[in-house]
Length: 408
Image (tube, rainbow, N blue to C red; front, side):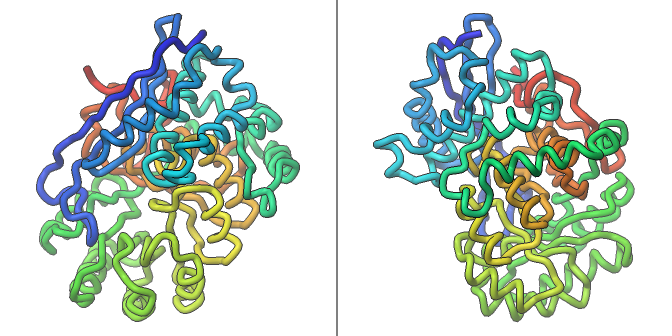
């Protein structure tokens, strides 16, 4: 199966009033820069990366520039040592200046790489999760680019983690029968009224969710505390409630406001401050302990994740394969999290379509703890194979590929 041509698509979707709004992103248009890898067999690999509207066309232009070297490549040969391929993509001698490993060019790489994994899965006639868990440890390691992270995790350590995780793999595969737990992010978008948040909370409970998230970051912190307490009163002490500030606060604000939240026992406080400020996150984690810090939605590459882990600046790693350089960098970051003893709960800007596959791999093949996966249902009707969430649980996808086909 040989790649013969590459095309892109700029897909943008209008949300209903209030959906997707947080304390920083006030006018979202959920969007995808889509890569299509066309082959001589008629099979097409489809990859996505996520955006909020404006600039999606720039990502598509970068996809076209970065992906030129893939035309004419055989799929098996391409994926046999994909770590080197992704390293070349990330270090294009001219386009690298636009990153490196962040911004438009890395979002483009995510779309390209995700398309490669989708195409590989289709060539092997397997769902992506099945393709990945069937790989031997050596094959997984060959997919990864260890440049600039090997001081924290090198190939031999990654291989050892994967080999050790083979113990108990069969038992952990039980998740394929039970499904993977989800949590509801749509309970508490930032502009929702208190009444709507209360209604959504009760609906989430009725739909089987025991975990849910509230957007915070109001100019008047008392509003956020009131709304968080409201959810806690409705759900009771057994529910898991997360708070997401979307990078709104300064360090001082995060310390002060975070302490006010501790009375309602949040499971984590997410993206409290600027996403590149490793040292400030480390100080915040110390100041708010035992309240956990979660981040990763806007952490763009493995080196930065390495720094956060080394600094003990987070407890929950929210790596997103549509923000970092695709599926293989997601796996690399997950391996680092495993070494550092962190929990991995991906950010799901792509509606869980790809990440429902990757959390199965993380749990079964890496031995990472099964926690839950974010669920955002606003665009499910646009996908040919939307993620199936029933009674608060992601059901295992059985279609081949990475579940990224859009409805025609």
